[in-house]
Length: 156
Image 1 (cartoon, rainbow, N blue to C red):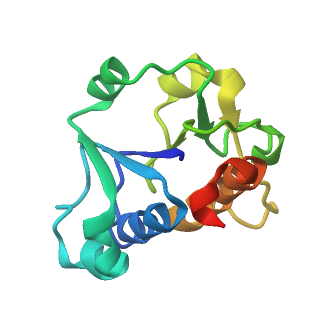
Image 2: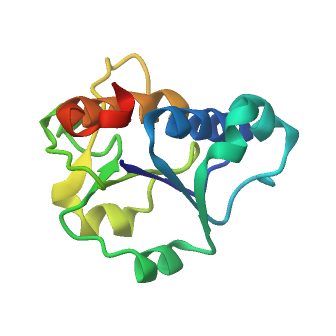
């Protein structure tokens, strides 16, 4: 199992789709406030379909609360457009935390700087700035699963 961490998500449809992704991938979803919407919003439920009630969801009051309650060392990866290291060069381990920032601001700079050697990116052409958050989480999460597939008996 992996942990997807969304830092200050802003778009309910993305979060709903990511929740659905987590249920199907056996991952835990961590949402770090402030969140740009009410997680009970119809859009979140619609995007998450009937999966939302099956989701292993943790909501944190702020980033400090998250870090106080979760030991982050070599068990985390921070997705950003501000690095050159592609996600497929990262070595994912079962239980790792994979961080994604808000759709508008990304992961806060101070966190990226603190964990600089754990920053990863999804390669893109120079024609765009970034990918949709839900698509990005799926790309990285399923590569982490691919790297550890033999230990995921419930996904076979």
